[in-house]
Image 1 (cartoon, rainbow, N blue to C red):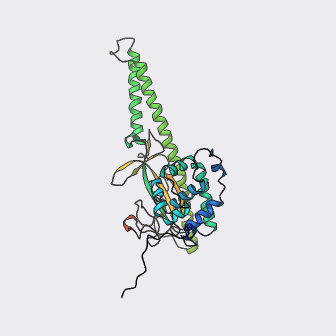
Image 2 (cartoon, rainbow, N blue to C red; image 1 turned 135 degrees about the vertical axis):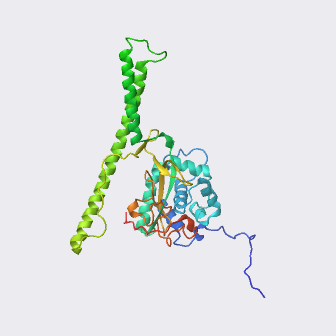
Image 3 (tube, rainbow, N blue to C red; image 1 turned 60 degrees about the vertical axis):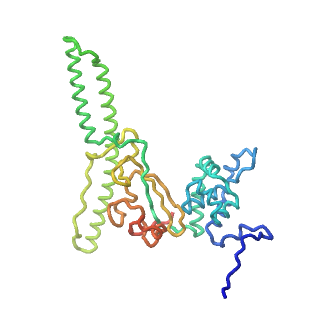
Length: 350
């Protein structure tokens, strides 16, 4: 005869349940609540007028954001839904359910304060042992810039256009010289045409100057790396008494390359490969997550197409969605197609 536990979803509680009993003692949600309650939130609470209906306390909304982001939930709508579905977020929200508009408005309203408070949370997490900085997963995604890739101008093409415009200016000056001896074609105004071309020449010169400045900065960085490689090669030779294997590093070339580009609409963006093939004008938005605690420890928007510099990549020259070892990556076990196994990254303590 079977012996099962009774299933009863109808009988009410004799006493109201305590949210404090819903989670184990070492749960991340408890840590988030304790840390948020220890933060100085007077800059937030003082910004409320106190009139009208009662507002959600900033500690509750900040706790929802911190725990949501730490567990990989960023959408305000998903956070609202999780306050019903997730026991941990019900605990953080004290069994309250702020809607997605409230959560999104709070984030936008106190964005600067939240950035500083998030740093404090991470520092406390590290001190208390909740954040174990060591193996991290770094993920990047291309964010399209508000500019077309067809607005990009290469250094080589800028030189060709400059030569063409200078030739056109020379022709216009020759026509101006002959203007006293013959009538000009209808609709041709030499001063206007000269001004138009000189304006384009000035813009080209400014674009070329910016490309040259970028090339100078790149050369300084590559030269420093080159010198470091030479020094390391020399040190190995002195230690072993033998000539190092392989070819010596090649010195970097100074000056801009013919393919160096600048976008005339958004000069901070860069041409990058995008999913599905092809290239577009983009930025590379990145986030680094501690593999053990799943806390987001860093985020940034960079101009490099690859998630890591090539000297730190573990396998190929392609940009990888995941740079942690496959055994430590929290995404890899769920969907291995997202990751290419590489060498795990060891990050020194902050």
